[in-house]
Length: 362
Ligand SMILES: *[C@@H]1O[C@H](CO)[C@@H](O)[C@H](O)[C@H]1NC(C)=O
Ligand SMILES: *[C@@H]1O[C@H](CO)[C@@H](O)[C@H](O)[C@H]1NC(C)=O
Ligand SMILES: *[C@@H]1O[C@H](CO)[C@@H](O)[C@H](O)[C@H]1NC(C)=O
Image (tube, rainbow, N blue to C red; front, side, top):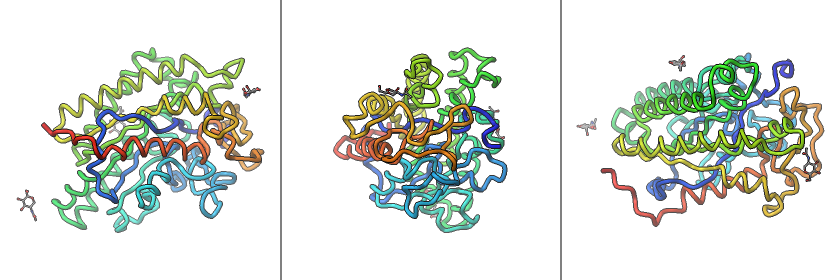
């Protein structure tokens, strides 16, 4: 039944991360072992959807997790680690646990939480056909609950300090395209021109980022979208298997608007330190020149998915022999090996700028 649901079952996409930040040095101020809060979709999920009984956006079955510690599916939408997992390793911290895996007063929340949910988007109705997923608004509401619990544990002032020093990784928007605007049978693709749609996304995102700020977030890293037109689920729509240029153009418009938004919020919100991580160029380069990075294939996925019924790697799918040869694991998500390349790049960009002058708050 997962399959019946629709063509894009899955999730998210985005390709990830990496990129160039606007205000280099922002993260330089981070503590050696920062606390991180993660908001996102299937690219960053670590198992929240496993707790949503009716969600169709799940990956808790083989072959997912085959290259993760223990070799078992965890709810991550890849064969191994997400980019977030790899960044956490580099920071010397454990990847923050899935919000829904924690008991309400769990002390673990003091070290960071992952709110990400496959199928989620900036807009509430994105990913509607997954039945259950935690939209960005839902994730922010859950973060507000976390904040109350932290306050009950350590008091108001320590909570403000903790939240303002923490790093917030936010990766949203891929599903607003892949599982909303680009789905011909959903309303938003019919109702809006792209220009109107991207405006709706960016104004909604602005409110959401301001809400996080009001809750105490200061250091926020927004991962721009990757070239969604080049992911396997989109390529199959082209007769020749090429990247969909129109989709890539739209993604770039979204990215440039979000980049401007983060700059604006940095001017308006005292002590805000938002960074826009432009993931697009690096992901595009990896897809265009896979051999330069030690990969062989970037135009189709390791798992022989059926893109007409969802594009996830189902238990009866065939998996490629050498998973490190492929940039993509399924029709939407990069392989563990690709995530390593992308995470290294992202990490350098965010954290290797400690010699840059700190931005001045005024
Ligand atoms: C999305 O849902 C949340 C909570 O259900 C609500 O507060 C918010 O206004 C909704 N946003 C839009 C754009 O409908
Ligand atoms: C909390 O911070 C405020 C403002 O800095 C200060 O006046 C107050 O004494 C602090 N409260 C505690 C319990 O430390
Ligand atoms: C991927 O690229 C290879 C080499 O250019 C080509 O032979 C193959 O047909 C392409 N596969 C898909 C699914 O487009």
